[in-house]
Image (tube, rainbow, N blue to C red; front, side, top):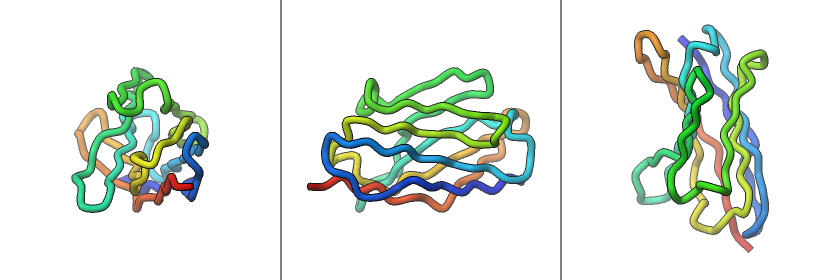
Length: 117
């Protein structure tokens, strides 16, 4: 079983940047496909970006060109660099890990991102 801890959220003005981190403990990080999801108030949780064990990335259309997902297997950490933030990016951001072998899925506790002037 893997435990995920997100950090890096906060309040930022429109047009600003934030970098989220998700540190994984326990398990072999390299066998997990990683992802970031977000959930705004009264909305369903949605995919933001994913990165596979082979480092293939995928992004929601709403964040393409603004957000970048990356991973550092040596540090058991996945990152989400968010640039040109918009008020509609305001949400709780969750880290997700899916074991590439048994497909078990794990979630972090979430970190709040608020984009407001």
